[in-house]
Structure formats: C-alpha cells, structure tokens
Image 1 (cartoon, rainbow, N blue to C red):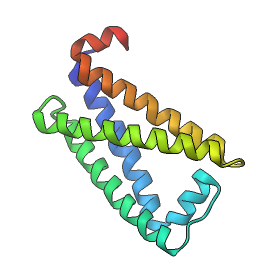
Image 2: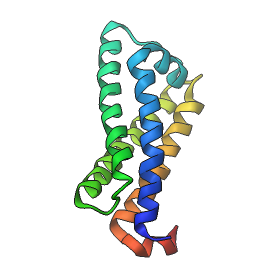
Image 3: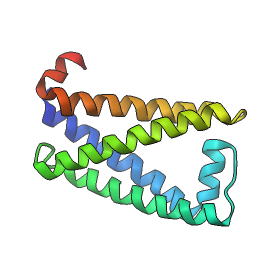
Length: 135
C-alpha cells in the first residue's frame, strides 16, 4: 500500500475514534475521566473536559475530511497536528497510568494505542512511500 492509502485509512480511523471520545467528553467529562483514570473531575475539570472534547471533535472532523485527499498540503497539516496530539496523549496517559494504581491498565493501554498511532503517522510523514517496507 502506498502513503496515500495508509494516510486515508488512518484519517478515517482517527476521525471516528476522536469524535467518539470527544462526544463522551462533551456529554459527561467526569464519566469519561472515571472510566479512563478511575477518578472523577470537579466543576473546573468538567469545563476543561468539555473544551478538550470540543478540540477533539474539531480534530476528528478535520481527519474525517482529510481522508478524501490524504496527500494534499492541508491534509498533511492535519496529519502533523494529529501526530502532535498523539505524542502529547501518549506521554500524558503513560504518566497518568503509572500514577493511578487501580485504573492504570486502561490509561496505559490508551497510551500505547496513541503511541502506536503516532509511530505509524511519523513513519508515513517522514519516510513517505518507503514506510510501507517498514510497516
């Protein structure tokens, strides 16, 4: 498979997953935090969670539309933005997972998923079509 096919698939997967997580954060940020980290949020955390949900929804929508033209300059910008989000999410969830005794497994699993997604994106963005040999 070439770079455009891989990017289109990753954009589609990210568009769906990020939008679902975004909706969970917008509707019930404390519930989402409770599932992932075994900890609830206070009132300020709910506000921040909903704002984060709005940002993730925006990223999900951008990914969904970028899948149609995955190698266009704007779509590559979405890919770099998605990569930066996945790096931050991977590191943050890894630290949270090691700090939260009872809910660490789910946070560490989510961290690993973000890390894997980030590695694949980085390979596609840096190596381009040569990434298919690595992947």
